[in-house]
Length: 249
Image (cartoon, rainbow, N blue to C red; front, side, top):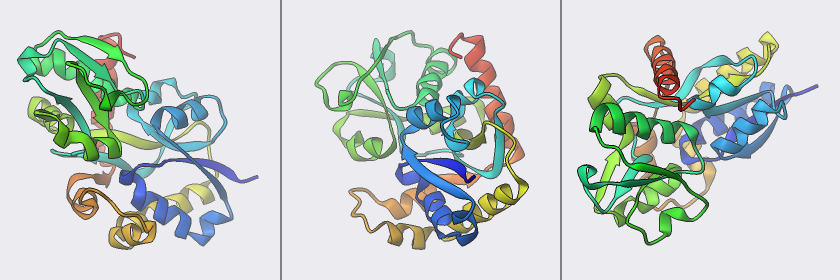
């Protein structure tokens, strides 16, 4: 039986997708599906897939969760695709719409509001299309939508940068997680495929055959970091602990 792999279909996973689909060895061992963060985390929780790249805030909800690669989606400072967008400065924000696609970004903004910005807005869950609605509320916007719509707002706060400024460490948004022990042959092939993708970013971009309305080369080469270091593993633990302390997890 093939290992079931789910991939987040965002621009920041282009290198991973390329590497995984280029691996002939992995093609024999895995089958692939796609979705946005909340979807793939739900599939992993319900054992509809065996491994996925998921938001780190979803890790505590995954039965038998285990990190299986040396790769992730992270940023040391600016990431440009996880934003708080507003037409008011931070100190004037009284309502924040949370992004329906990512638990991690929503918890991150609440931690920053309390521990870094010292503001106390009302947080409201959103639905699809909220980022285009005419409202006074600030909005957490992630992924390609953040890269596309940020220019529409007067104030834009990069949440990775805000985390770095507050805690002096990088932030990890997503990591590859399995919900069971997987065969060593698969894990080795999976890591090799991820490594190939992140070391061939230009080829990965060319392979998408998409027209981007933002600078995809700058984004993947200079904003997103793909290495999951021991420091970043510690950051995941710290983030989850803060989320639990605030009763957000």
